[in-house]
Length: 324
Image (cartoon, rainbow, N blue to C red):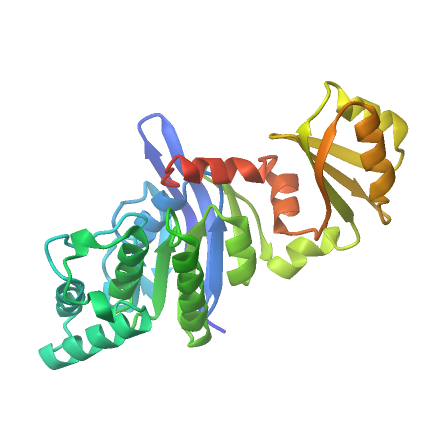
């Protein structure tokens, strides 16, 4: 299978900040490839270089077999781009925005009108087709922005934080649409803060930290080392000081991680008996609100490899981080 995206030694600096450092990776045709990392890791900078919006300081880029290193816009007819912030016009209607984008890619009048109507139906936006984009909700704006990115049926689609800041129902619909595009053969390069999103959608994932790729592998291979782990998460409304050291002294063969908001994560190589743990915590003065068994996931691997707590990514998204 040929590679749709080939990147070698890609680097970009902004003043004293090294945003991206010697990135090398490839994405196969028809693959859904995820770029996962915290805010400031270099995800948006990477997409901007791949799509011709920023010039790399060093490195080579090939998209769909076209050398874009010195001709950053040479492959624009083959790619679709959905930025982390909408680039559509608030004064135009949803239908007018899509027709305008289609015209930029050379679609004839009849074709672009038909394609616009088709995408409005697919994204559930037909009832709002004649409303101005500026009056759309966040979820509706995100849907139309993605529709605009695929109006010309691109071979390669770049999605920068596609479900950032939208409601749960809209995010679910967009993930389904992304999965449909992938099944139809579109090569998709997806950046995200959301570990569960990457795990659900992507075949392979690259972990990006401080502008460098620290690990690239399939989701199955990444998760395999934790398949035999047993995990319990205990949530406490109140928790005494130094509870971690007390747990270690009393329960051998278990690992304990104290997280924010009164959460204790317990890991072991064999099944964990929850009752003794809860009783011990209550005897120590903790008020246990919930105790549940967890399925080891990509989150565990992410924390293990990067040293970054997964909940830090969610907090950054709540603050509106752009993932640059």
